[in-house]
Length: 158
Image 1: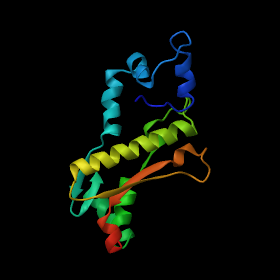
Image 2 (image 1 turned 45 degrees about the vertical axis):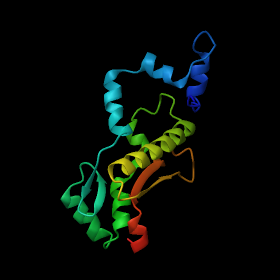
Image 3 (image 1 turned 180 degrees about the vertical axis):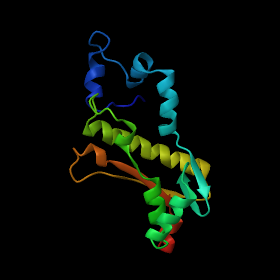
Image 4 (image 1 turned 120 degrees about the vertical axis):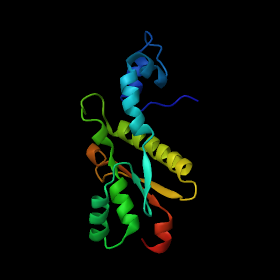
């Protein structure tokens, strides 16, 4: 079943093909590139690693982990949540090309599912909770976030 595109992408696609419309996947066929696909793969299939007891995005330094351990007084859930969070708009620095609340919400839902699948595949013995946060004002596009932590930290209180 094809994806339902969020606005304003849906309106743009409905005008394609002499007004007969086009499926969402067609957008990549005509406007995508291999270069962007390679870049997008980092967003769509992120690299995670096990660092001591933590599952973290690749690139976490031992110094940064130690800083957060001290700052959060041993709250492992909080450490993973902070170090693993992303703001959706950090990946898209040019907001003038159709970025909207609907687009950010769509991407947030999709990326949560991707994170869940990747974490289950890579760490089947370490179930994780993936969450998204929506700002109080849904038009604050810079404040849509995704993060995750291991569920075992919930049972132990961090």
